[in-house]
Image (cartoon, rainbow, N blue to C red; front, top):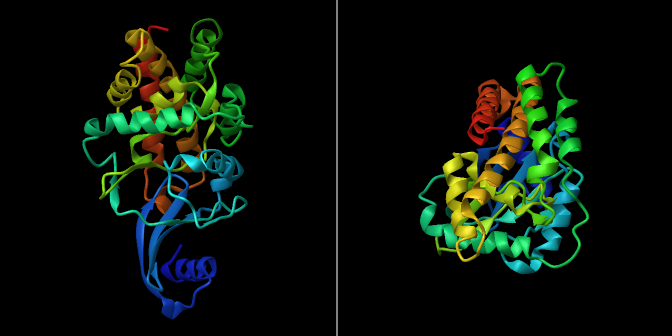
Length: 290
């Protein structure tokens, strides 16, 4: 989107005139959205504007349900405006940094506290993660898929029912990677982006933290279970197993975005990203000796 189009969209979203907008800064272009910091009429907000293809990858109704489900926990910024049909969202701007940019280890206790607030939240969350349907949805976006993907997928499901299926299903964020944790300048930690939320295994959330490297997920797992009687080595094995599933999923997502020629729009090499995820799945499979 060019700057004039963006400015007009923002004016419509905020219901303000052009002379009321003081500044628009691009914060980032993620894998599905453009995100802007906007100063207007003495306020500063963050505005998420999804790309036209974004609805193929996320369900904003699920995000709305998740935000309402955990709204009393004070772990994510309260939105001003949220349209679950378009995915457009307006939030207060938080001066701070995401945990992919800094040493996260001093903040592990805060991360665990946030995740446990989500996992221990009482009540019924209506969306349950479906491992088969989730992959199928993304497979259907692609005309051709590397045969290695199907080999690894088959191996993963061969071990699910008898070894790794978690009967203790709880509310999960399902994309709790480092970049989705924001540390404010005041030292308060927030978690953002609930588009993939579902009832799932806690090991799935812990695995998500390994998006920059599986060692991050291992460190979080040790912190999460440090005051329990759980076998840490077994917990880490489960986390690696769920991480294998996640990188297979992200391989499909990145491949689909490359196929849709979104590389230039989002300034990301989705072809390389997809191959990196497939390589990560191969490595985890070998490490797990599946």
